[in-house]
Image (cartoon, rainbow, N blue to C red):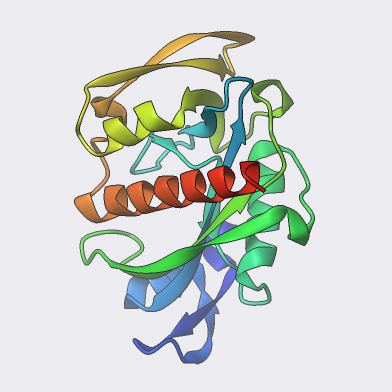
Length: 213
């Protein structure tokens, strides 16, 4: 069971203190690691398409929200990049080599009212272009959406109310037009949305830099 998975826990300065079960870490409000893996690609016009998952695990406090394609807890025996590889394989169905991941940074987040009260989030970008049709559904991701980065960034930052994209849903695997709205981000705190914004801007800078090489 996931509640019994071993997690490393840390002090506020990032020093590793030991190992507990996930349930114990959450109960005690310990600092621990999460990892999120974004995926994006340049399209034929030079624009950037971002891949998102629709969170679908029963009981998820963010059920129905859109998120990075993969994310979750880093296990005690893992490095953050190893956790990123495992989560991407579990949630997207694609195995990634370590060199296919670009580190986007990290951020500390405290949410005393949440399940994960104190976390250090590690962010990665999958440098391999992942097409919408490459994705596989999982218990946690019941759908995937591809959307233009600039429009999604404006949605995240509250500068527009909706954005069009293309999606695949478990109920109908065929690709179809979808429209994302601010409602699908409304469960997130301002701090989480701030991390979304920072990651999207990092993705844009990385892909534009690579395209200019």
